[in-house]
Amino acid sequence: MGMPEAQPRTVNAAAAPDFDVQHFRRTLSQFATGVTVITTRASAEMVAAGAPPFIGITASSFNSVSLDPPLVLWSMGTRTNSLPMFRDGTHYIINVLSASQMDLCQRFATLKGDRFAGVDYRLSATGLPILTNALAWFECHNRSRYDEGDHVIFVGEVERCGVLEGPDGPLVFQSGQFSTTTPLEP
Image 1 (tube, rainbow, N blue to C red):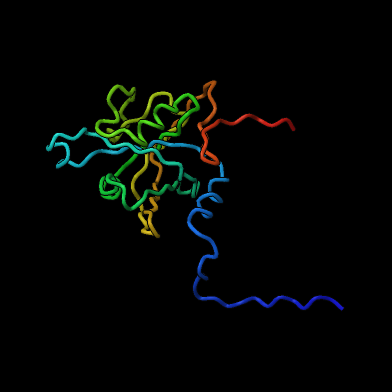
Image 2 (cartoon, helix red, strand yellow):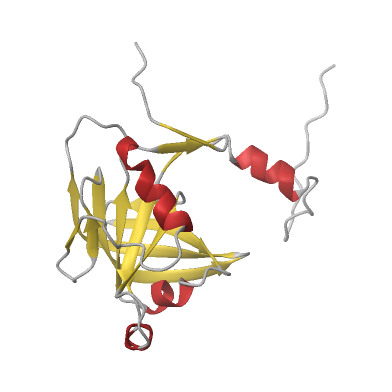
């Protein structure tokens, strides 16, 4: 005699989590992810008040969505000061950092003030910063935004993109540490 078959439950809502925030964070940290700096323009009001013209943040929540149309996504915490510029802007650039750009990762994650001071970049077709030596970049139209939990999910429609063939691998974040990739032997 075999085991009785498990009967699927019909559920209309998620069950309450059986873990705390620290456990969830530690579990999420096992997923290795690339590191990006996402750039956009500051609002006209901020610039008039003396703020730098560009905003940039470090994010590891980048992912592809669709090839046709070309869509990517990333997310930002709802308590982030620069959220209104990303939410209200028409475009942004996603810069994929190389392993040698750890300084940019830290600068755009923690520095207050003009994060672009002394940083090499060129302007995209929409006048936004593309960081010099980024492994790849995506110039996106700010297509959709979704409020979910304590984050906003941004879906960008890629209008232009580029890749840099270089000796550096990507900057990777996993288990609270930065590293890069090394190919495995087959």
